[in-house]
Amino acid sequence: MKRKLLIIGASGHGKVVVDIAIKMNIWEDIFFLDDDESITECMGFGVVGKTEDAFKLANEADIFVAVGNNEIREKVQNKLESAGIKPPCLIHPSAIIGSAVEVGLGTVIMAGVVINSATQIGKGCIINTAATVDHDNRIADFVHVSPGAHLAGMVAVGQKTWIGIGSTISNNLTITGNCKIGAGAVVVKDIIAPGTYVGVPARSIHR
Image (cartoon, rainbow, N blue to C red):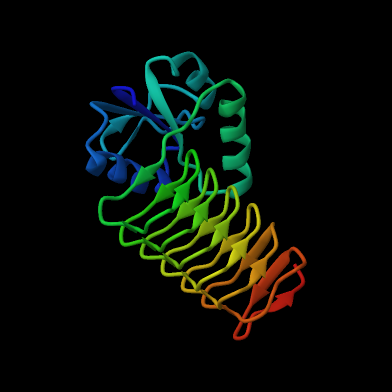
């Protein structure tokens, strides 16, 4: 870890990320990068440049991508990694992480999260406030598990899928990549086709 942390994205998600970074008490200095020139600070921390500036500042700072959109986060983080930059993981001190849990580069685990044993979390994921991910889950890269979502044991979630707030995923299920699971949905069978799924039980809707 370096003394400085640069957070790409000075909006709502960035506010939560910087709060976690403060509580981790690792970095002496924290700054933001954002491509919106009208944003000059976030939570009292200065915006010192644009996303492209990360590449010339990487020798002096750790770089974290705090972009909520899965596809944009993937694009930015992959560019960083292609340049040899390895984003840190940010884990809130109140999160409970079980034994033999693996967490990929650039993933953030927020306050009140529980991740149980033998689960694998990919890179660039968001495991949001008070979500629970039970044992032996396989969460692919750039997935967002929203606040209060609950994944039972032996669940597999494909790349860039978004699990909506308050949703429930039953055990031993697979959800393919590029899906959106609506708020409060209950998934009780495998989802094998990308799309948007809502309701109890969750069903596909055309959008």
